[in-house]
Amino acid sequence: MSTYAKGELFEQKVFDYLSGELAAGRLLLIPEFSTIHRKKKYFSLYRESFIVFDIAIEVRRPDRETPSVIVLIECKNYDGTIPIDDVEEFSAKIDQVASLNGKGIFVSSSAFQTGALNFAKNKGMGVVRYLDEGNFKWELSRSLLMGALTASERRSATIRHALIEPSYESAVHSTYAATPLGFTNSWEGIIQGLLSHPDDQGERFENLTLPRPTSRQRVAFLSASQIEDTTQELLRSIGYISGRVKLGRIIDQERTRSGLEVVFGATSKSALGGISFNPPQIQVFTDDKHEPMARFTLAHELGHFYLDHGRYLQRELLQARDLDSHQTTRLPTGDVERLEWQANAFAAYLLMPKQAFLERLARLAVIHNIRNRGHGFLYLDSQPVNCQLVHDVSHDLSEYFNVSMTAVRLRLKSLGLLVDATSMSGRIPSINQIVT
Image (cartoon, rainbow, N blue to C red):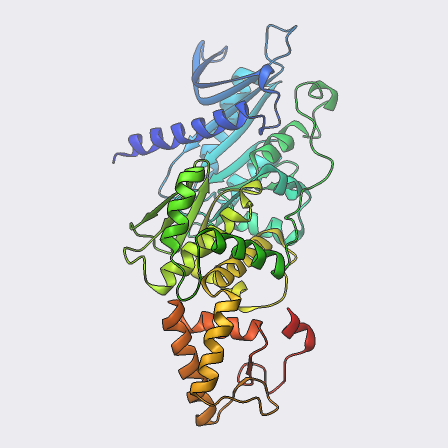
């Protein structure tokens, strides 16, 4: 694809996204007062001709013929970094056509040179690195992004790194931006940063923007028992009794009820699967839908769906490192981490239902003559006999429920039935750990 064609596609992508956000009232600007244009011409007295801008958002009061604010946007899809010269040239164009009420945003799919970043900040402009949504994990709703403009120094450093590091791979957001007011991950924050520039009179814009929520919505707390109750209700709806859970029945039932589609196949460099909520669709990046990791991935995404995470997410991609939260009983405090923990817990409870799991384990206790000799039902240390017993039990449960042996051992730990001295430095789990 030619450089021009790549640029046109990127520009159209940004335009389509901003058009949707503006219409939905998620861009801070009042939709009724705002119009968005592509390839809009503005006359320059210095050139005695027109300058064409990639994207323009004009905001005007009903009683005014001329816009009170014009947000002018330049889009670049470079293979290399954005030099300061490009940002300076864009700034000069704005000065020629809208020096008093023009606000500039330079949007790129690639990184910015440090000089370009500094120049934009000192000129009251915004710079945005807008990454391909095919590669990013989360796109959080506005309610979870409201704290971006008052972020900690750690978050600001992360956003700045994303803006200037060419090899940066997005892990959470699609948008990384700097404005005169600070760093943000939301387009609403970008607009707020531009309209709050110290050189401006705030009252000029107070009637052109939507009120911002006073409080920041947090991901709702769900206990392990609440999540497990949700999976039990779902299992009852498909008539589950024992053995491996037939996820196909859940998919068929939900397709009829809500239109949820599940697609297997395709490939991804880093993701195991993903979900989008509007319309509802789950993707699992493998052709083998019966493989244990594929089943856990599907169950994880079903967790996002049935736990109503669409209140906080527009879409999500699951990567292998996100399964780390499945290996801890601690309830995370961060929003993103809490969503992941809930989905992982849902997957474990759905694929290894407690009653069926304990019934199978009771049978294995008879077969292997397992007794609690004071160290727990199963005790794993360096002794070969204990290692072999844990392996045999885990392997049987893995085959029976068609899940990984790691998932089995974590389920055993969460039920207080496996004491792993190899990972706990010989310490017996606390009452809180076992109860959790």
